[in-house]
Image (cartoon, rainbow, N blue to C red; front, side, top):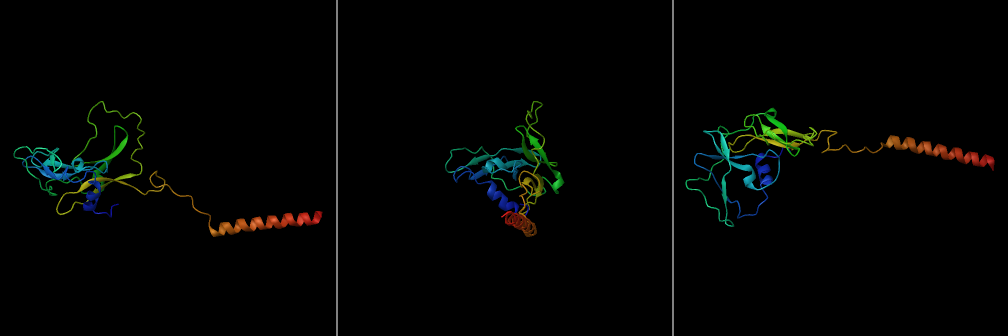
Length: 199
């Protein structure tokens, strides 16, 4: 999956709602737009595209409008440009993308530069979690495009032995089949000889 460009990944991720519901995105003044997808899921654009204010390092939910909605845009809000790499970037290398487990025992990725915590309360319920929920996943730093910053993404791995890529049972080699065939043939000849002797 690393070979798939980040731009293509965005197209696949934001494919949940038909046109008319989230056509235009608005943010407060001074904000730009960022993309974040810690769980690696597919959903509506509003799930991933957020408003970000570089001056305060604050991320917020924007307002979405479309021909099929009657949502009103707050006065003074703007249609943001994507944040540049200088304004917002989650990572430079894969090691800055850390895998964590959320309440509900789901694996997600968090940036060490712009951390995301699935639960910040002291009452987070991790009962039932084994600690192995992130087995078979990697946190990777996906390069941005057109001057935008990099994004931490969660990806399935192809490591032998994990649950996402089971190792198939290999078929017997031709040499092994030949050996088995010879053994059976010798056994049949032996039985036949014994029957002839008795007769």
